[in-house]
Image 1 (cartoon, rainbow, N blue to C red):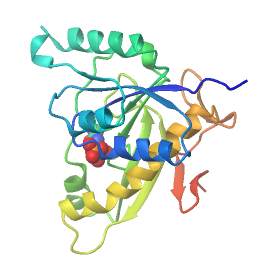
Image 2 (cartoon, rainbow, N blue to C red):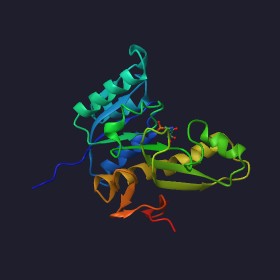
Image 3 (cartoon, protein in one colour):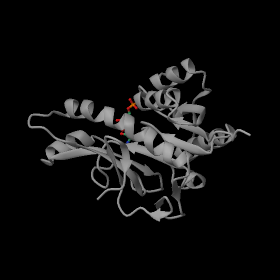
Length: 223
Ligand code: GAR
């Protein structure tokens, strides 16, 4: 008997290169999940075109047609639930979510953020890392909670900042790491090696003391 694949919805506001990485990983047989919905707050998002090309149902909701953030988020989450999704991945979804509306998804929703959280929550992360004179930058995947970019961090990819790097170069060099990080984390969730215990992330049953680290061979426990 074949087990049904874990069902995943993805939200993205932009070009969708992280979505593309998820779809590629699935195509290569490295990510045994079913993508049941790709949603966006922007009808023009490249991510929606990628989903259409992959025959994944899409959803575009315009925040301007709702009275407030909560109304938008409640409708968005209701539609995601109706898709049958068990997991929700924010892959470049550039909206702040209402803390109450997202509650039913806590532990089942992850976000990729382009910084080494807890550093640089919010926007302009590459610029802020450069302005701070950091020697290292990176990306994080975390469980989403009501605190913006503040939920428990699951895994990180690290990158040395080179002398003369500008914001654009740094973002460009980080992106391929994001494209490995996000599918790897989703794969661990789908296989249940990674679990949410109501407060924190557990990896193979053990409380995750530090984020997993992305290395050449994939994710591993950080030293
Ligand atoms: C990615 O760099 C992702 O880390 C970032 O948006 C980009 C989306 O690119 N996410 C955030 O900044 C969330 N706060 P993509 O559309 O090509 O995947």
